[in-house]
Image 1 (cartoon, one colour):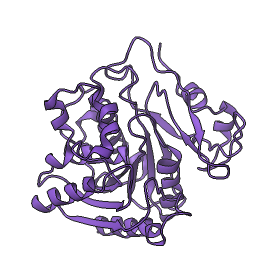
Image 2 (image 1 turned 90 degrees about the horizontal axis):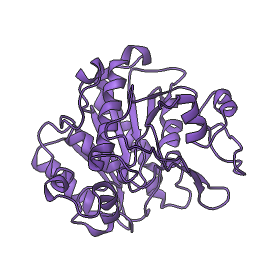
Image 3 (image 1 turned 135 degrees about the horizontal axis):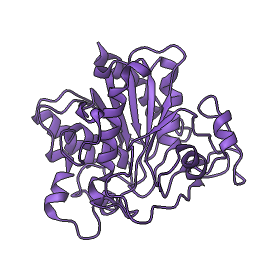
Length: 331
């Protein structure tokens, strides 16, 4: 049975319909389930698939989202995503640039607040229209699980471009930023944008899925680096076909057609081995892909735009570095 998008936003994200309708800007606090700091999902959003998503199981995942972290620094994680959506955050004074944010979560959940909603809070004031992707999780029963996140990411890019006039953006200035597993998905989109991972469903699928540029923040890249193994297990399953695993080892997929890339990682990251970034950087250099990299001595993992209070001073500036780099890409 088709899922009504208002029901999805209300039930799927654990928010009341009244709170969604009343949320006029990102970050509006919405008390729900005893969590006074739970953020509201924005009233403007769109679903990716007009009917069933590719590989839809007989029983859809059941939403069971959580708030996580210490008191005063809680954040929303999405689990059980029955229908992927894209949230739209429009600036009051838009320029023609746009950014699709892809949160992480090891392909086991979507860290939508730290690495999505707060990305919009950071860049919307600069005139950038920000889109946040709540993609399907591969281990929640979908067919061809390994292709599920890329299906959603490609489709999101194509729909945004097909509706560029509606959003007041230049489709040639649509970039992406991804974090951790979302960095793997952003890297997959940057290198595998032309892979045929689903059958076209409408005219929007004639659009290119290639981003104009891509920011990869503490990204998972290559299963050879063991600290990111859980992410690949969640994506590929317990006994992956080596050929499929090779398709998503993205430092091996870099070509001259890969767009300009921006890297951010702390060298003391205990969750994603910094060799992921270094390997991808080397592949880009070999293919003569324009790159910029910011490697910090300290910072750990998970320093989204507004989660940096306890991080090293230098890591706090990465959002400004990325802003400057995005401006350069638009010139």
